[in-house]
Amino acid sequence: MPTDDVARFLEALSPAHREEVRRQPRQQQEKLAAAWETELREDTDLDTLSELSPAAAESEAARRVVEGKDS
Image (cartoon, rainbow, N blue to C red; front, side, top):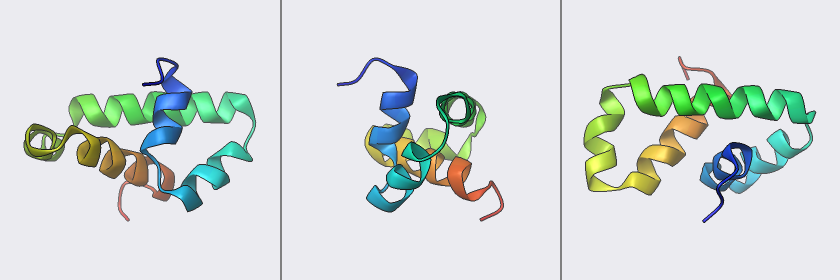
């Protein structure tokens, strides 16, 4: 399991989103990873999903960050 926040974030993304993020500068990847961590910590809708499937909650939070929260 990756310990680097960016690596963990990339792991949670779908393959298409992962490639999109990998093409961005490292600084932008770090900003997205930080936003992902915040999304996981603060979005109460993800709490229930996290209890059922932590990987699914991480994936959903990653998708939201990449696509924008309203997507």
